[in-house]
Length: 219
Length: 219
Image (cartoon, rainbow over all chains, first blue to last red; front, side):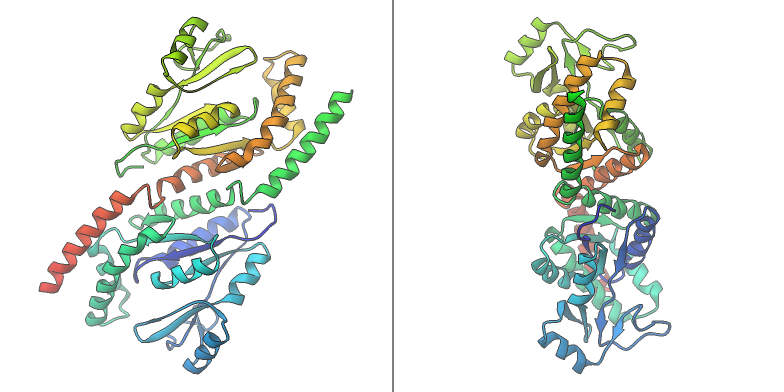
């Protein structure tokens, strides 16, 4: 937060219905209120827009041909096929902002997270864990997006996805949303205060400290 | 924060006058308000009590003979001589609480921090950085504890201590106290949500998830 330098990349994953999108949006509001600069990365997808979804805000909606062209051109940090549709994160969307000192939040499926970490090893990986089977099922049903058979499949996938949490740095159990936001916000603050991250700010303070001390001793 | 298991050890160091004690106390209040269990570790010292200081609250005041007996008996996690007095952290004071699931905050001099990390490698080390030479000098003068010559010496030590920040995990620039408390609180929340720290909670959720899914699929 401030201090210049590169932005940080936060990869936030969860099984479908885990509530990560809301969690990220609320956390970003708190970061901005504190002067933080951050960006919610918008994925590319071949899935058709659902009612209310806006191109460029919810997703970049592209054809399968365009998506495949981008894959071959190496334009994706990660991509995956999910329920018959392709999803991907464009490298340009992320890298440019990190270089400009802006934090980037990636809201991606569990299988995509490992690919990004391979390409950007300093990425911070957060797994949003459902509090229980019943709660995840309730959320999937409440969305009214999927027929029962699709919900059943998502729950089966979820069980397998929960097993890879060991590849992540942090896990947040998304039981009470306000508490989960506190934790993700806390993780962002903490990561910005890693010594390795703010070392140039610390070096600058130390140098002026040294000069002032020297002048003071001469008096 | 809940979830059982061992408490976490937070080592908070700064040059003398850096403001770490106030920072820790305010952060602990916020952790407790959230249901966290934490303890401010009280050091042993051979320094005589200052007016207003209470034995067992500010320090355990002991004789040099008693202190040396404890050193030889291996009862200290760390100890150091500072301005002619001995300071140390008793192993029992820390270990017992960690085992009981209570977080422990150690407010120790920079030279003591490395000794503890050697003995408790999972300790989280936080360096509280003064925002500037002028500000640290102002705080030391405002305390009215030291004559000018002692303040001069503390500032010289500080300059050397700032150089070892690379041995710490996090650095907090103590400019505005409320912001510094946000950061230390955030670090505590984050550390409690490391996958390695809450792995048993995650395992338990995953197991009940699996059982519920299995039962649901049988229907």
